[in-house]
Image (cartoon, rainbow, N blue to C red; front, side):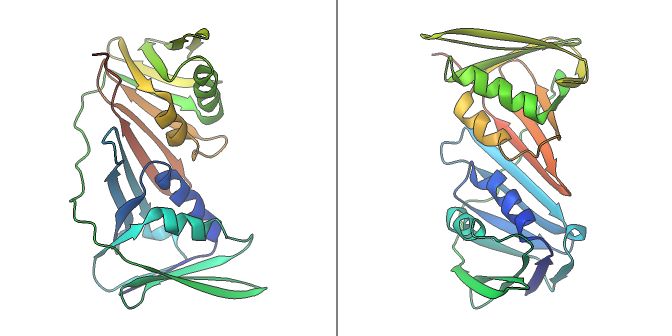
Length: 247
């Protein structure tokens, strides 16, 4: 049994949007420490790992750890109906998830069925990355959008104090070079140079949930999955994206 309250339903909506951009269903693990989820997208190209601590909630009552499987797309549709200044209470009820929205204007309650997620949670990849960079969210979103005008893929190349993003396609080519100046790249730690190519559609979905003015932590190793993480207030979201390898 659990009963969880957020004073801002919009917060949970924003967290969910960052997850559902990649996966349509998954299991939330709920314990006294908080709520977590780890899932692969249907293609197996990307993974999302989500964690929000219990301190982020105004009420967090959990009798025993529980895992609830949900159709995240359906849950997202409900959360899109969030009004400003609404609180949200979530609890389990007869093998369903109950969501009660409340404000000065009144209350409304939804119930959605729990589903059986048979696949065990995937482990996060263990990679010794060569480059760790802190990138500002809006410039990173613009880099990805600019590259999408040229190609379906983007190449990231990183070295000491320099980050290069390039895209090549039938319509032209783009190369952007950025230094550790605090405006785009706040910090780069490079043990050695690294370069890899990634799918732009997945990257757009990954970064779109990152709040304005936030930092994105990016870890890179040549021809290995990209690790990208950011925070939505207290919630931490980490993504892994497999590189594109030409056959």
